[in-house]
Length: 123
Image (cartoon, rainbow, N blue to C red):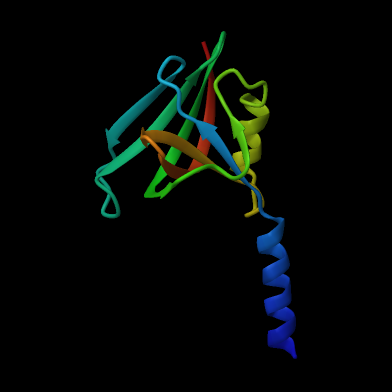
């Protein structure tokens, strides 16, 4: 019975998590690769959104998956939702909302990378 109850709660938790997407746009975002000198990964990626008086940084995981289309809410550089509150939400998430950066590879192919950490810097 304990195992069945545990499975039920895991199922409910998975249903409660929401996938949200940040669409990469080269006109208002930068894509930066850097050498992490880590045993786990030799290369890491950060996406930077340039706003009026600050920059928002999204560090993504190396694991990426491709999708034919996006099912969920999408943020762009011009979305009012890209701000310090979003940075706090990503960093303080306990498995609820998951944010992904989406890059359009080719016609009908979207590559997504999970945002692992976020930060903001005032200019």
